[in-house]
Length: 267
Image (cartoon, rainbow, N blue to C red; front, side, top):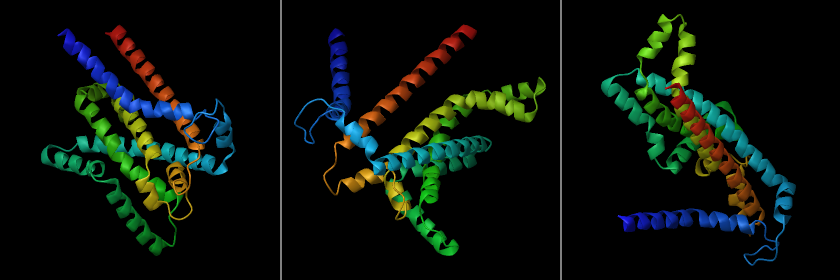
């Protein structure tokens, strides 16, 4: 039993090392004075160069704006869709729920090409070019299913009678929906929001096919840099993004622990 416990620890350590060692190497070399993987000395040179590069800063800004807007719209639409799907019964609900999962299991390139053809067709009809708006719509489309996927389990766990109880206690329908239903679904909604933001910020393929000729986000900008020698500024940018994600995850864990503590105290 003891040997199994040691073996499991070694296995987990190796997996964690495999996952995070490249990231730590990237962070270390973001402070390298030189451009190569040969250590030339500690420096903040590439962080300074990063904040002077207008192209990367603008691309990062576009990525953040798209991710924030897409995640908000997708969360609202996905939550409403999940509640609507839950009102169906039997085969109808199973069919609609399965259909909502198709964008998740289908390759990104299929969705990217199909949306590109749709926007091209609409562009000819209504005389507009692909750009910020088409990228935003595309990101909303592929983020909505992730919100539905996170909210549906919370709906299944929720006691439907508490909504009726709230109405009996004097709440109107909107108050009962907001204070009871949304409150119960909030963990799933928040998870869907976070997942939508992450997938939108990380996306390349769908953005590539729906961006048109002028719009640039961070993934497209980094891809364009692969045609020439990649600057160590990307190491600095990646290190900052990793730090931001790490801070968000720590805050989420603190929030979850606080909620568990409050829940135990109320029980």
